[in-house]
Length: 129
Ligand code: 9YT
Image (cartoon, rainbow, N blue to C red):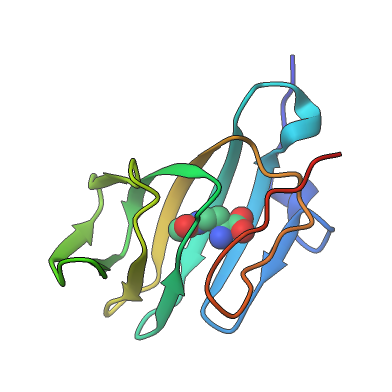
């Protein structure tokens, strides 16, 4: 069994930060689960352009507030504690933090390896190890 706590991840290579978000990666490809599992904080008042062309992702908000806009149709969906979105069509989107930091639990299929960060188009490369 695998058990991991936040204090084991904070400040290590399994915590990744950008100007608009911080992410703690609890499970990666090497853990063999078939998905990766993350806690991501989206900072209040920020906007992040994201397009995971090579990964499907489901995200569940457990705190804070914000919104997601899908680029293809300009639709905006509010996000709060208890809201889930699934990028089942590799949907390109803008993720915006609201009044408070948003705390999200994220699952990726295929799992990310851990060295990915968003490129200028908000894309993760598909990294094979
Ligand atoms: C909210 C979201 O898309 N999180 C994805 C995971 C995070 N960007 C990471 O761990 O790199």
